[in-house]
Length: 301
Image 1 (cartoon, one colour):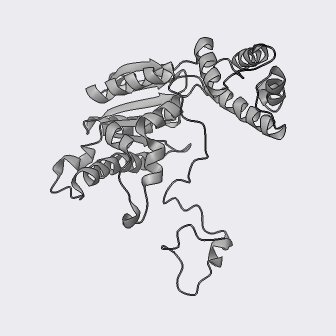
Image 2 (cartoon, rainbow, N blue to C red; image 1 turned 90 degrees about the horizontal axis):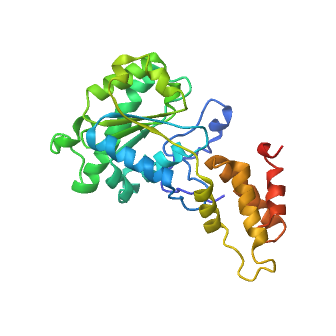
Image 3 (cartoon, rainbow, N blue to C red; image 1 turned 180 degrees about the vertical axis):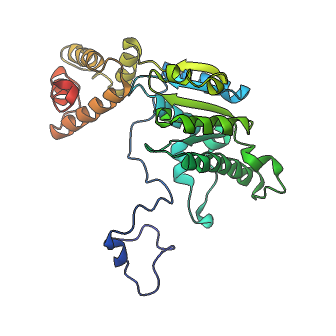
């Protein structure tokens, strides 16, 4: 296999890298793996509501709380707002490989942090400043062509990062939440905590943090009307259908009924529909194809 980055190698001269096969080495996390090819991001009404919410938290530098059922699109909206995918692909352990900073990072000035399942106070204490400071330094690099916090002082203490989004905030224990509050108090930055329904009641038990929450946002499922519009855009009806498009419209209505507006279920079902269409060399959308795709998912039983 041809090396994907032949200019950089961790191996010494004459070494074949078999030591990596010993099982003592874990993942090399210099940058995130490229995401799989997916359909373009759908700018739904719920995403626009989240964008307005995030802009408000970012402008007023409060703590915002966002919650919603699993699969409704909270993380997807947050990552799209922050430009996280672009940021992860832009980063490189080799400075000479860095290209222009993605436009979305310049616009959002937002750091994205996801604690691990067993997040310790030490992990949070290191992770939050690192995520925020990197954004500030990157903005300096993009605007000045040089990163020198003693010359461009506004980037010190993550000063150029305007918003921090913490996904999976349900994983944070009491000490972790206190660490977030402490970080917020020591910086001029907006913070958004994203979690499951009920997190707003849980945080009420921590008055020092709860009193700093200035905005709350519930991320809802797609309405049937909006989901129908999204699906119709994704699966355009055939112009010369013999039944006048009845089968296509019935298939769309079936998808809406099965998924109930849950964004994750929609994505999983559409993936199966694409698979069934390719296997059968068929481009149209019919209730039979939807039913076959549904049978491959747990929601179909």
